[in-house]
Length: 299
Image (tube, rainbow, N blue to C red; front, side, top):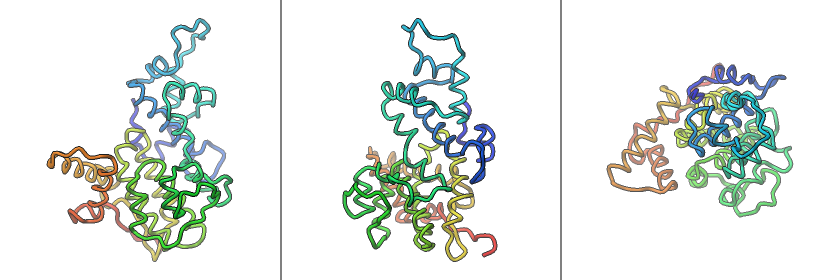
């Protein structure tokens, strides 16, 4: 299958017929992201190796006598490229066979990545659908009645690490919301801090992002459109001189090597803690530069 994770944002948008700029009439890039991510979550769950198999393993009912003889591999190729978003009926039908796929397609992260919308005006807030473990960190308690981004005070490295160690779509959505809220409130210093955490989590999720077809284009989207908004004192965060792919491979590879050398079988949280320790320079100074700062043009 086409490895869309290695495409630049421009090439990804060309393949998905989406726009690679903030506003316009064409298909939104985020719709392409969520469709491609949904497609690959089903590919992984079903074990399909081609778009030919996607219909046979996911949608085709061999007992049905009413199936029209259409070439549905073309439809699944369209989802693979992110050109069309599946309709609700199909998504719900597929959910019965592959639970969790509906949540991937309709995750609050996608709404938060639509940078033309204010995070404060959406009711209910996309964060209202996130798990209690994140509410505890963000609001200082497991309070899911909040509809806005009313945050607990005194953000520090320890609180941010509690979010980072939950690396996944939920935690990523939480960081994007915190970052965007800081930007919209005019707090560039806090936005700069959140942007560093966002880069760190993207590296930790590198293997997942590549498997779900959105790694490099989503990194480009963040680096070109979101991270510059979090610049502070003429600096903004990035993924180092060698880029995201190299940095993610080095981080995940080093963590895997450590686990193998120590003959350990770590939980996901333990693996997250290990990668965060590497990024915090507790084991090696080499990996601490994977998330760095670059000078903004004109600074």
